[in-house]
Image (cartoon, rainbow over all chains, first blue to last red; front, side):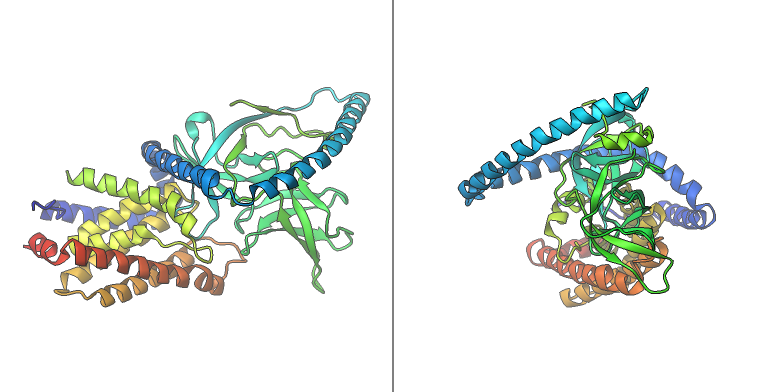
Amino acid sequence: MRMVNFRLPYNTGRIALVLAAVLLVGFLLLPSQLQGVFQEVGSPIGWVLSWPLRAAASVQEGIADFWGGFVALRGVAEENKELRKELEHLKGQNSQLREAAVATERLTALLEFKTRAELSMVAAQVIGRDTGNWYRTIILNKGESDGFKSDMGVITSAGVVGRIVKTTAATSVVLLVTDPNNAIAGLVQRTRDEGIVEGTTQGMARLKYIPLLSNARPGDRVVTSGLVGGFPRGLAIGTITRINKDEEALFQFAELTPDVDVGRVEEVLVIQSPNVQAEGEQLGVPAVRPKS
Amino acid sequence: MKMAVLATLIAGLVSVQSILLPHMMVWGVMPDIGLIAVCLVGLFGGELEGLLLGLALGWIMSLFSAADLATSMMTKGAVGYVAGLAGRHVVYLAPAVFVLGILAISCVAGLVTAALLNLSDQQDWWWAVRAVVAPQAVMDAVAGGALYWLLWSRLNIERWVSEYRT
C-alpha cells in the first residue's frame, strides 16, 4: 500500500519552526493587531469551511426530522390534546392582547410620537455550536457578506439570544445570554431598576447591580434597557426567580430564567440597526421588519 | 496531495467538533478531537508536522468559537510539537501509555488555556478544573484511546509508522 508522506523537507521544517517562534513573539508583543490580521485572513477560509458545516448541519437536521417524524411519535396524541387546550387559552389571550395593542396605538398617537424606530433585522440559521468548552456560543450561517458585525444583537420571537462576537465572510459566532462572559444592559420591567445581565456557570442568567432599595421580586420580568449594546429597549430577557441580598453589599442581584431556551434555538434574527426608542415606546412591541 | 489531505482533515474535524459533538456532551463538556488529531499527527508524523497542523487547526477552530485566536493557535501548536518530540524518542507506544499521555497533555493544555483566556470572575480556577479541564481530559483520553486502538488493531499502525519513519 502506498502511504502519503507527511514529513517535511529539512529546510521547510526549519522555516516553519522559525515562523512559529516569530508568531509566538508577535502574539506576545502585538496581541490584538496580530489577531486582527489572522481574523481578516481567516474570513475567506471561514467562508470555504461554512460549506461543509452547512452540509453537515443539513444532514444532522435531516436525521433529527426523521427521528422526530417516525420514532418520537409516541405520546403525540396526548400532546395534541394538551396543545388544543393551550390553543383555546391562547386564543382568548390573543384577543385581549389585540385590545391592548389597539389601546397602545391610540396612546402612542396621543403622545405625538413622531417616528417609531423600526428595527432592521436579518434572519439566520444556527448551523453549529462552539468548537471548545470554554464559551457558550452558536454559529450562524451568515456573516460579514450579509452585513453582520461584532456586537450586533441576536434575538428570537421569544426574546434575547445573545450578541455577535466574531464574524467571517459567511459565518458568525454568537455569545449566548447564558454565558458568564456576556453582559447586556437590562432593567426590571415593573420597578424600572437597571442593571447588567450576565450568564452564570449553571447555564442561567443574573441581573447585577440592582439598588438595595429596589422592591424587585421573583416573577418580575427583565427586559433590555437599550442603553448600550446592540439591543433596543424593551426586548424580553428573562424572569426573576430569586433575589439575593448580601449583607453589607452595595447592590443586590437577581437570578433569572432566560425566556429563550438557548439550547434548542434553530433560527434567529440579527438586529442590524438598534435605533434607541423613546421612553414611551416600551409600552408596545417593537416594530419588526425581517428582511429574509 | 498532502495539503489536500490536511485540508480535508481540518474541514472534517471542524464540522464534527461544532455539529456532531455538541449533541454528545456529558456534564456540558465534549472531547476536543482537534487536540487528539494534533497529538496523533505529531506522534507519528514528527514535531514540525504536529506544530503546523496544531497552529492551523487552532486558528481555524478559533474562527468558530468565542475563544481567543492566539491561545487556541499556540496551545494546539505546542501540543503538536511536544507530541512530535515524544514520538521521536518512542519506539513502541502501548495504548495505555497513549491514553495516559493524552490525559496529561489535555490537562496541561486545559490549564494553560484557563490561565490565558480572559474569563469572567465567576469562572475561577476551581471552576475551570472541575467543570472543563478534568472532564475534558477524561473524554479526550477515552476518545483518543478508542481512536488509537482502532488505528492499532484495524489499520496496522505499526507497519505504517515504521514505513513512514524509514
